[in-house]
Length: 122
Image (tube, rainbow, N blue to C red; front, side, top):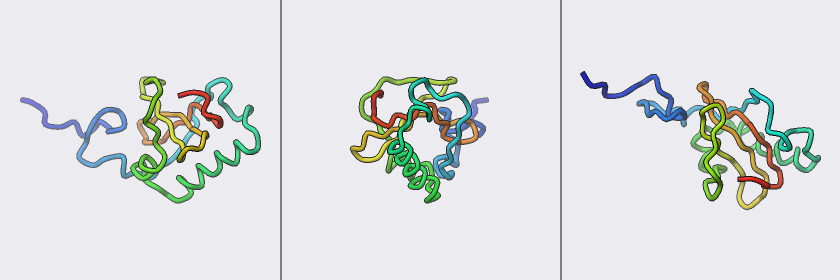
């Protein structure tokens, strides 16, 4: 007998259940070491302010993942990358160079892998 849907799969992991994880609150996590040269020790005070601003405008405003995607998701350019089998995406605002890279884990947290204040990578 054919299965109509796999409710256990998260849409953030390639599935499409009846209720979307995109409606969950946007939450961030750091679950592993950040990419070399794109971590906190390399951030200047203005870079930290940009990161704090990103947190204020997303987590601080209790936006959903869909709302954050609509406001911050960058889709142009870049090469498709994966970390731990998950597609890496990046967020930034308008034409400002600050970018945060990461992926969504199975708990719907955006796991930060790279903080790129000067948009040196895609």
